Length: 281
Image 1 (spheres, rainbow, N blue to C red):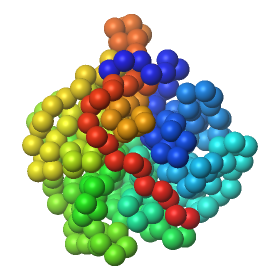
Image 2 (image 1 turned 30 degrees about the vertical axis):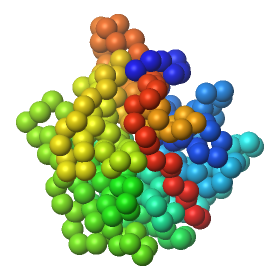
Image 3 (image 1 turned 90 degrees about the vertical axis):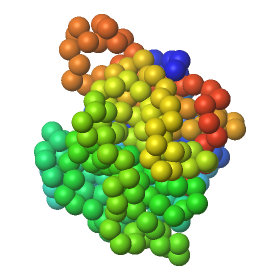
Image 4 (image 1 turned 90 degrees about the horizontal axis):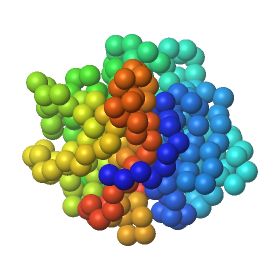
């Protein structure tokens, strides 16, 4: 992968290609920033993930709420609380689903075991789906709308959840889809391409790995930063792969060896991605 943006994020996350604007947005969670190629916006607390609502509006997950954010003015309006009464947690990985809902994970600021959960915001209401989790990640959806995927990073497992085809709510219990136990690979953010292959950034491994719909390893793309965090497909034809990374927790020696840490990367002509779904408020 090649450098896309050289601004260093302590914890880069949540890349979102806005299909209407033809623009990539991403976050520095610990820095409380939303970034795009030409500017950035500061928030009062941690912000981690977004979905697009319309040409000029994002839904943004913060450490205390889901926010309606105006890209042009920077104005913020609270849509609903998100564990606002729990000072231990913040938001983490999230993504819009094919029905216009938004799935969002929470976790402890210090990754406290079992402090987190995954929620779904849908048609004005927020409902908890899974708990307890420690570091919820890899939230993404198959192109046929049959499945959601998610991970709890320390467990080194990606789960697959069958979805009701009417409104997208989970059906039955999630099943183990990919077990990375016993390997050095820890699943972070993920996205599914148009062919149904899942692309997973793997924390500490400096790579984005691709698996087919049955969980078989296909290939991996090297990221010039060990703490790869989340991939996204974008570009005019959705064939360009982007990936965020993190600099947090790395020693001076490690940063000297990997000066790309915390930067955002890109590689064209990787696979055909899906357009990100719109959030319906």
